[in-house]
Image (cartoon, rainbow over all chains, first blue to last red; front, top):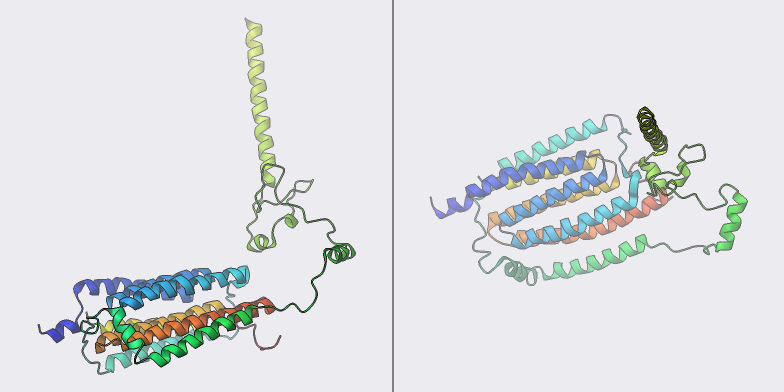
Length: 275
Length: 99
């Protein structure tokens, strides 16, 4: 086998790695599209990105492989998760189609596009793979740095300007200028009394000293749980623990224990009388 | 195995990302699908870099990552701003630029 042929074919180890990780990457990509909750999509995408980092390393792009993990999986996906948490519980996608048949049409378009791409790659007269052995001979990072600061130095400078603009833009977009004076505590209390809906502070969650977790609603005098005592977010998620039946169960256990004790006492009394 | 398979995988990932952009309506998930497409392009760049035996493809992939980072920062800031005023992250609800 000559040198060109060895460079154009990968080793068996890389082939095995490719076929296993390609399945993982495709599964992650499908998960990103098909998962209903945004958090699950983000986690699937993070998995795909880590697999792609491994592929970069296998292709001789050592610098990019590490940057992929640090920048993409580390920074960008964490930013995504932050925004998912900020946007909160209402972020779940509605499954109702607003345009009829849009999903099937979209899938059909994607299929056609994929066939087009695959046919294009299959019919392209690709040259044989040279491999990066010579280009990486002085070190991958050194090679990229030499290109970045000579041939692509202008693009590099413009990238710096782009990043500064993006940082300033993000601050401008998320900054909110207060247009009116903040109401004082006195004004707030006057408004609350005038509204007349809930004059004292909202009741605290938890029942006596037994259950003081925030997801346990306080009980009204008749034993029914009061929704008002639980945080609105927990209410929206339906994460409220109902302990109203527990009191009855505990009472029943107490009665059973006391009746057992009484029975024991009576038995002892009878025994004593018999002797 | 022929390294061309990396190109096929990149095409597959790009297609899945494009389908996601067409199908999903949550703005955050749309953004994730765009990221997926950018990553697929990066994989193709890195594979072409290996094919041609020089590092130019890797430098372009590096620039793509930088632009993607800037794009995500601005895009997520816009999503948060829209969510504040409309209380929805669905792209169907934002028909107007003005409130």
